Length: 278
Image (cartoon, rainbow, N blue to C red; front, side):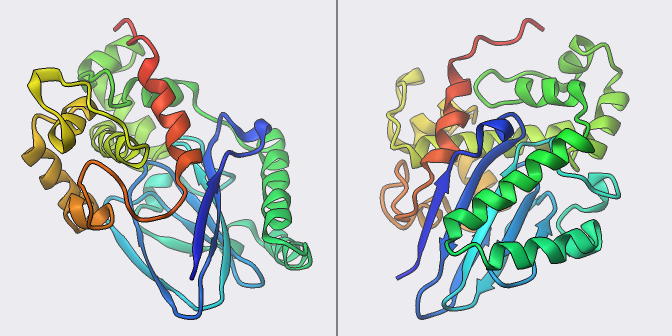
């Protein structure tokens, strides 16, 4: 049996990293379905060659070999690590990290391979990222503010958001494409689905707005018009139905057996923030 466990990042990375994880495959290869999250990811097989996964606009299927251990980092939208290009050049791509970071990656591969445990290897990777962000990475504060406003719990129009940021809609789109990889509207749709997924992974109970409960209620809580709207978006973003995505059980609860708590807890915490005054 394999395992997948998400954890909170180091405190120094809390503003730029959504979650980190350790994945172990068992005696058979594991088919991994990667989903759009709005952010980029680093996938680092222990003893292997690490990859940078660019922003996704749809599902990506990867077969991870048997007896493989991967540590990973999922960044918040708009907070990518040091890269030689803007993110809209990396959409739906998986790149060898050595092509982006050069010889630094060789040293990291050697250091992490000798770490002794995946937990220690993940700590070393995060420590490297802390230094990267202190030394070389600059985050666009207006994009960070835009990402916060585009979270699913308080829907806002793109024109209204641009006006709030004192930008034109085209300026906001350009800055979002460079820093996130996708347009504000695409990011908003991605975050809305991530909001639904967080509710399902947490086993949340629908608020009962419009007299609905179960899957339909969670869909409305995440900002969808109804359950059918959610189902269409789920097929577009993941390639499968909500029931299949969540492990084949009740469609308002995730039964995949993976530990996603470190990812959904901070995401759901934004649910309680007051809406921005736009």
